Length: 231
Image (cartoon, rainbow, N blue to C red; front, side, top):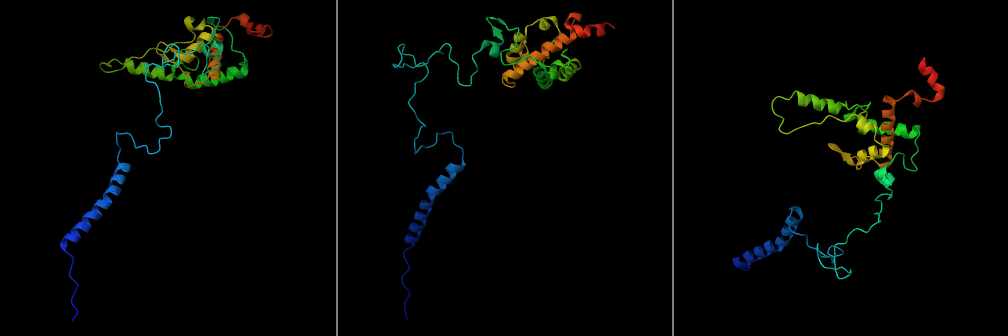
């Protein structure tokens, strides 16, 4: 009768199991690292351009004569896609005064006014109203809520939207109205980030036409149409 081969010592099974467990440990750590967020920087095996030499704030830079790493803006330089550099087009200013005309390239015609009316209706009527009297639906709703609030409003306030027919606005040059649309004024925020430059000029043109429509005189009417208005 053939005898059974002797069984290996129990310590051999224990050692093999332990080695197998340790062999799987790196894969478990890698899986955890890939799935769990970490506040530490990732390990960069290939550096590429992740770390580059640079100067810290207020550091000394011997490359320049004044040894300053933080360089001031160079006068007259305009960033790429940063604007045309024209104070008339960008700010509504000509020779230090508010512009009274549209910038070159933007015609004062019905196409510009119609485009301005469309943009005005989208961006401005909510507060200023379609006729520009400051009676937009958002303004009316805010005033109604403030007037009917039960108890304190805890610092919440709403300022009546300005009427564009108010003499303080009606007499403003078109460049000043454009500047207000661009940068805002008092409680009104600027719309430079939302409305392109040419569209802001179109809105300013429409506002001037809207003002004229409510404050016109007989002399503003073309001669060939004045007689019909007198009847």
